[in-house]
Figure (cartoon, rainbow, N blue to C red):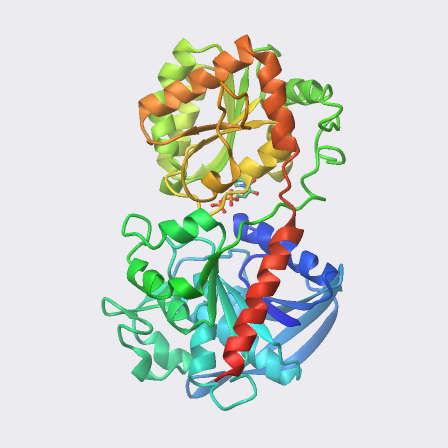
Length: 477
Ligand code: ADP
């Protein structure tokens, strides 16, 4: 199939979170299954353009045109197309706040479609990712009806329902979307235009990044106001668990860690722990080491960790390393606790990819107390690196982490249900007791986690089926 992926993030060019990882891996898995995959991305100021340049590509917006350039570059069998338009994408920021936010991504959606017609490459299916691409299915059902792209199927993937792209209605005139779409069964939501909502109505098929999250988002508690539409479209919605990039996240070959290891040869993991302790300035002790790598936002539940951490650090014999950034208040509170317990807690505020690999390899446990988690990647990286995840039972964490059952000696992590001080304290305490009292069980859990298959191949087969299903349905139009 001819597949066009449209996304604001794609590893290694631009990554803010898990979406970047998905775009870095899924297209390669689809190419290896014989598909023709093109990816369309903004040329942010941080990306050095290379490859072939097409000039004077016309972007047809509402009643006016803009001229941009498109860069074409092939790597690992995937064709990348970068839209160069200085006014919107000239700086490095992916989700830059400000007056132009809606226009930036309306332009992005429109330019993806105009590139297809300019280069005379008409895909079978356009796979759109998150709110920034939400106008594409709307364009195809409105302005593109009866034209070259009018019969192209769309698959829209929700990576995070919380960010919907909500803007004043004048964006419709800018984009050239008919004002007749400004109603509750299309783009309108409480007097505003909602990009995500438009996509949910107009896309041929919907997916999200885990089966459990696909169920959760149909409830008021997780639906972020869009649960009625998601329930209405439940027959077209499927949860497909993300995979992990086996090349980037492989303890046998990872160049970011001091010693490589595998399930059969786990001994060098100890060297990784020492290296992590040294890197972070912790004493090289044999107490259990807990890792966190996370964006510091409400979704991730780190506020509750901050509440309970003084008691954890005071009472339990352990160490913890934290890498992340986000809410300034949370960053400050982590720093204060680090100053109070320098032998037990070390914090790196910022984004640091090599350090995140060291944490996955060197920690004994990895903490993810998310309020909601569409899929989550770090718990899978952890298991791959023989690090036991401690997670709250939500979204993709439910689909990937089987909690320890001490009677049957099964499981590869620790799952808790309530996001409370007590639940976090007790689960960390449980992990410590297994570490100190049952090292053989701990090793068994490590091996069980490392044996899990999180390959993109499995996900690619499922996406392929959804693409076929979408194309078939669209052809009936
Ligand atoms: P989300 O997309 O909600 O942030 P995921 O678990 O799906 O959560 O993916 C997060 C990705 O971003 C992982 O690859 C994780 O290692 C990475 N990441 C998050 N924060 C940092 C950081 N401060 N430094 C390095 N990597 C980070």
